Image (cartoon, rainbow, N blue to C red; front, side, top):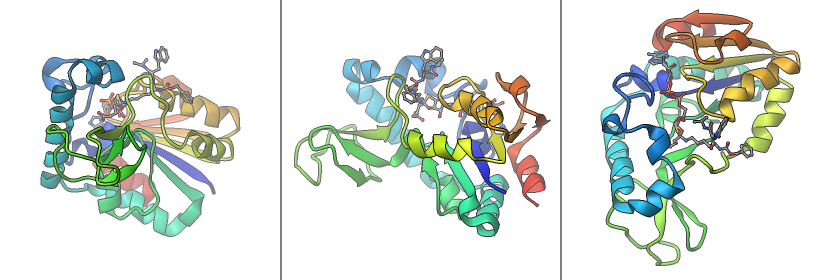
Length: 224
Ligand code: BJW
């Protein structure tokens, strides 16, 4: 059986990573839609870099939870028949044991140089605009996908969705496209669809089955 699992901020919530659209959303009351944009970065580069610096630093204080670990167990069983695509920029899937993770919205631990188009592993700060280790120009920004930018790996994601037998969505509000449209694409090609989320997502009616509760409880039960 070919399975595509899409994860969102809700899977990392029990690890202590705040979600975007719950009461304790990020960015001190600002809507993520207003700050995670190239325009916000052009207007306030230092503030946006600090936002990501703080989140990068806080990764050191969080650990994967049973939902991440269960998905890694599923990869051990299914191998390449599992396609795990995450909207999250944290590294908790990898630390939970998953080895193949498609980060469609980028990764906090990578920096992208706008001068040479290179990508480098990055654990430090970017708000003091350090030079790129490859070209020496100070044009590094977080390697993340903001609104209006094209998510990574879309060709492979679409290919996997088109031939999936089962599509499972974990911990995402269904507010952001193209990820919010994956359920319809998979269903239109005959896949069964399952939502595992704390509450009904915006697209809950598109799923053939929905289970509501904490990812740390629901995902291990579904996997095992
Ligand atoms: C739990 C839980 C627990 C809590 N257990 N569950 C008008 C209509 C349609 C589309 C558009 C439109 N205007 C513009 C667009 C496109 C736009 C878009 O979708 N905008 C919307 C606001 C409408 N999208 C884009 O611009 C994207 N690019 C694009 O479309 O390019 C065109 C293109 C596409 C494809 C091919 C070719 C061209 C880019 C989107 C980039 C999003 N970036 C961000 C920031 C990334 C960096 C960062 O992290 O800072 O990605 S925004 C933010 O939202 C982040 C997330 O990945 C994303 C989704 O959030 P997520 O994961 O769903 O989190 P929450 O907080 O919303 O939900 C958490 C859920 O978990 C909740 O339901 C909780 O209940 C639940 N939960 N605890 C289980 N313990």
